[in-house]
Amino acid sequence: MHFQRRHSRQIKVGNVAIGGDAPVSVQSMTNTDTRDVDATVKQIKRLSEAGCQIVRVAVPDEEAAEALSQIVRASEIPVIADIHFNYRLALKAIESGVHGLRLNPGNIGNSTRVKQVVERARDVGVSIRIGVNAGSLKKELLEKYGGPTPEAMVESALEHVALLEKEHFYDIKISLKASHVPTMIAAYQLMAEKVDYPLHVGVTEAGLPGTGAIKSAVGIGSLLAMGIGDTIRVSLTGDPVEEVKVGYEILRALGLVKRGVELIACPTCGRCQINLAQIAREVEEKLAGVTYPLKVAVMGCAVNGPGEAKEADVGIAGGRQSGLIFRNGKVIKKVPQEELVTQLMKEIDMIVRDNTSKGK
Image (cartoon, rainbow, N blue to C red; front, side):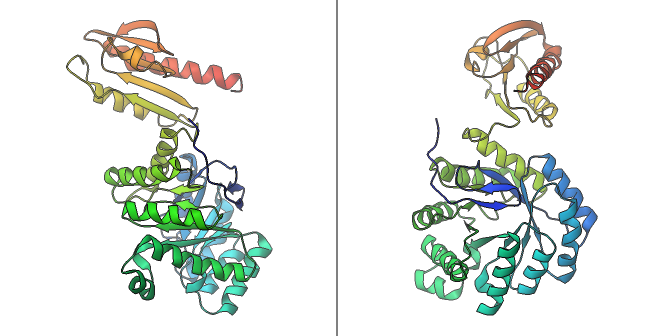
């Protein structure tokens, strides 16, 4: 099944295209102190290795802005500077070589300041994301709409967009984030009807990895299934590498990306004769660094395992003393239970090696 993507204009953040016919990209944000260049660069490297395509860093003061040039030079992926209220920091970030700004122009002062930032961004090809959060709408909009409604969020975003359009600047993407998933979904749906700018989709303040991943999957996944969304960021409390992993799981679940391993595991039943949860976790850990697109099944019994996971590239089906290794739904060998994971990994290594050597 292919989802019909909403038509959007295309912009660039460094070498990453967003919108148009470009694939949905995965973003994250560092949680290090940006002034600590070494720590920030190390985290960006980990994010890049996990598949992050664009990274955002906070720029709260002049010292953080000064650190940007070193961070940008060391980063393997495009860097976006997160700016609030201070137009001088935006100008400094652009001078430091960042590839994008997260900036609401209505919050940085008068039209002269907006014009300075816009002209410099245009000169060097820096795009700007308008980022509206339900929790930080201005008082007038809250009073007008009776709270942080989707309509209030959209009006806020369009006010900021108008300031950029007034300066004939159109390298814009928009986000409309809320921690309340229905509000966030409705806001993006409404915005998608009004403009053709690319949309950066996410559920803000989603929470810890467990519940946060669920909220993000529901919110982001629902919009992507409607064809809405050009780039995504999963917002979780903790290590931002987890955000990237969840982001790719969402895209994989919708068939929007072919990267890394999709693990299929049955929910277990009375026929299960192995510790399936433990085996599945072991397999998942061993496959963490595999970027080649594979569908791997870990099934609890040999009765229905191969059949139920017939669309998997490779998998195992456990038994009391032995289990089956299968590829593309066909059993290829029977092995002792204690060798199931080892033999599975050998098959996976063989598949990756053979297909890599063929250039697939």
